[in-house]
Length: 238
Length: 305
Image (cartoon, rainbow over all chains, first blue to last red; front, side, top):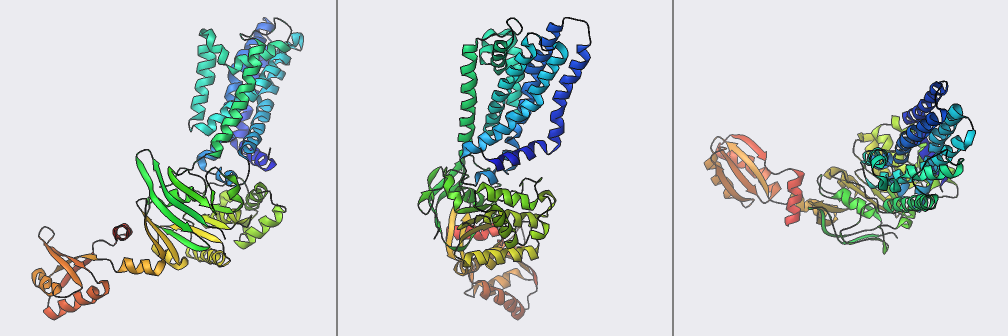
């Protein structure tokens, strides 16, 4: 990891308007939790919908998409990445530094609010809030790696990422059970289920399958992004 | 002594050939990479700075391949054409970050020295986003010089600079060249190159058109056949008088334009001949306009010769 790259990435990511925009996701989740928490309904059902469907299923991938692509795609688009790449720095160091910023940001702006929202709605019972929190920690780390890779591969990273998170995971994953196997959300849920008390969190994939998939995708994303950066070409003005 | 060698390099993008079988060697001193817009200058600089892989051929720095070799950046300083440069950082923060990324022993001292060199210490606490084009160019330059590189590559460094900034940068580059660094800058402006570089490499339409001493190539450019469109009070008589002189290679009477199309071999001879002949014959010159003075046509001539 390189601290200068970390510093530049943090300032680029949080120093501008994007920093304020990132607050929208946790505030929305906490606001809904505060409003819904006061209602007299099935608290478990409410917590699952809020933390699973809205949190881990929608807000977390969107936030990770903004952050994961934001830590690198902007610099590639405007060409300023050249100042990082024209240095005798191993490319994996640039990638891991940027990934560390992305992961910590997602944990702060997505995972922590999920935990707080869970505690507001359901308390600490059955380890439900902690389970979703752990699942979100794991999922947001892998989402960040995956979306960072996307940022180095395509200029349409946000569109492709949205298609994956919303169309593949949320839409197709709801109807086609096989699609859930290749879903970061489901892998996160598997980890969350293992942390929470039995029956609190439902996941469609065994932990034995989810953990290797999480590790492989995270590692492959880092290696892929480092490889892309090593051969990054600058489009000419001509 | 740092030498960049481009050996039989071609680079194509899909069906478009940006650089076609170019070989050149860039050694210590200031070299100008001259060519019209779209000639392939930026592509060549990207190839030399490791930001583009050659489709064919090799690009090396002192024998080591540049593509996918991060170690070359210990020796290369690059000043890219694009202006984006972390606009939220101050000039000092930007140059310091570059020094840190090079893992220099004392990055703050190196950043200070580089900013002093380009005379930007007075504005170093301002955000680079607020800089003028010339100031940005100088801070980019400081970031490229911070590790004291043997090779400096600059893509169109004079673009957008006012005359004073231009002179300052020229003086700086001249000094680097005199210190024995390998300095290469690209430009599409002949006069710019003329003022700074003794050695030039000319590229036209992706091909290496000329290489060597600027004055020799400039002479070649001046002595090329020139074409003029001439209108006068008596085109036929003027044509007869002009063709009798050795400085005129050919004349065509263009009926649609109602003008003479004259091809002159000796530029200086013809420019003195034309008014003299017209005056002696009592012919009034109505139009004398060079037909092929664009830089592109000058360069095209170099390619064909």
